[in-house]
Length: 62
Image 1 (cartoon, rainbow, N blue to C red):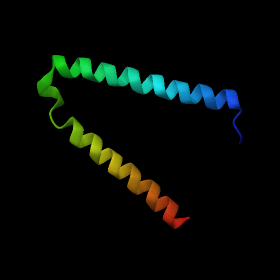
Image 2: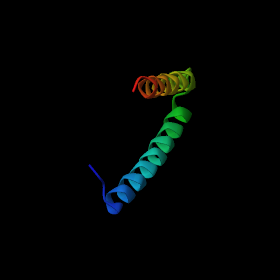
Image 3: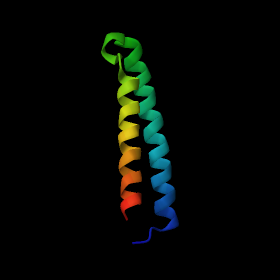
Image 4: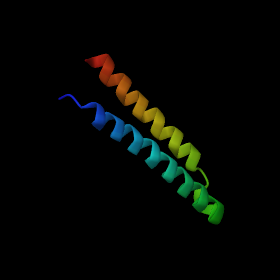
């Protein structure tokens, strides 16, 4: 299924705005509740490694 140029532009802009809003909300919450965010970076890194491994494995097997 092909996407139109308008759909791709919308998806790209939506993704960028979504990431910015989530980042700003995270920074605000982090400054208010420091004890709740210990180890959050480690969890993010583990999730990124798992996702990368999954895509690499799928790419390798197909």
